[in-house]
Length: 228
Ligand SMILES: Nc1ncnc2c1ncn2[C@@H]1O[C@H](COP(=O)(O)OP(=O)(O)OP(=O)(O)O)[C@@H](O)[C@H]1O
Image (tube, rainbow, N blue to C red; front, side, top):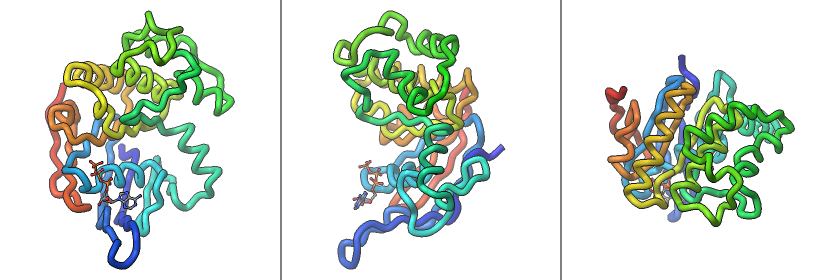
């Protein structure tokens, strides 16, 4: 089943001589439960595409449908609510709240949405992401890899339909990058999550089921990968 669809997307920044066509005419369908990596050189348009698909940057033209709902045809409140309910985000710079401990960070989006925390499920995620010993630690007491694992747990905690990850290993050393990406893959498989991840690191992209290569605002290659 197709969970996310982008149709004829275009995104332009700036005007006149400063005009940049970041996304030229991209159409894409994302299969539910798949792990998709978006790769390409710096400035090729990867982050713009991810942000457009996540409802964060309105395209100049085209539509984005999440589970059949058109993101940019609803009002801002509705879009914000839909993002909270259905999307999880993992960024390069973790974006954790340093005055909160690990578990508080993980359940914060659920509280913001006035929903009940599924404690059993959250404990299971914490376990899977190897954070059990750190549940009550503060963020500054964690390594970069541990912080990113907290960010992944936070993204998963609200049981989103889809997770968007923008260079999730961009701020980590090679060893932590591998560990974080393998754990992300394990939780993605276990919960049949859909993940779209931007990375410039081909080794990291290799965990994905599908690799989209972007160049100059266009998809130049779309490859399925055999992955257990
Ligand atoms: N807010 C913005 N204002 C103006 N131009 C922008 C903006 N964001 C991106 N661009 C331009 O759009 C193009 C695509 O940028 P984008 O960040 O999507 O590429 P990227 O592939 O993610 O790059 P990187 O790997 O370096 O993060 C680039 O030429 C960039 O300079």
